[in-house]
Amino acid sequence: MPTYEYECKNCKERFELFQSMTAEPVKVCPKCKGGVKRLIGAGAGIIFKGNGFYATDYRKGKKPAEDSCPAKGKSESCKSCPANR
Image: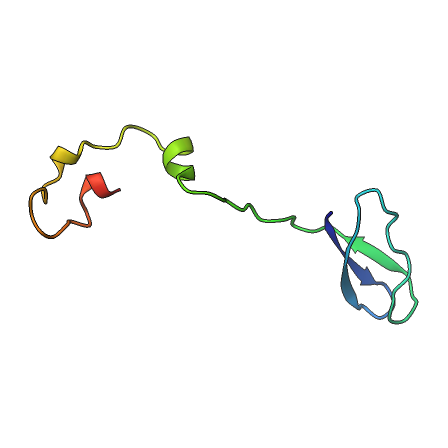
């Protein structure tokens, strides 16, 4: 269920309500009982869940081979190594 934001035309009080999409919009301010208007919201942000979203779904090209790493065989890893990207 979405959250709708309202603003009172009289006292300018802003409030949010968690309502069903089929519910009638609120018409009365809970603070001063004046008329309200429903504001147009930006919507919810995108939430990425799980691992590997970028690597498995949208990455372009192939991952470089591990043997192309200039730090291969050394005790330290190179942060700029293409194999670590």
